[in-house]
Image (tube, helix red, strand yellow):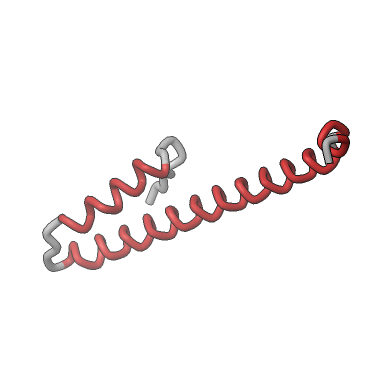
Length: 77
């Protein structure tokens, strides 16, 4: 089986695909396939959200470092 990725999709697009799966009629063998697909998308969304949160945290730390080391901000205190 060839596996492809969702690299060129935004988080919003991946969420839309995941949400759309909630509205598909599920019958027979499709139930397992769709459940696995939903889980894969949920995991992908979770990883993306964790990555974004980590990036934001790192940006905040860098901003705080810049503010503390800025000589102008220390003069105004």
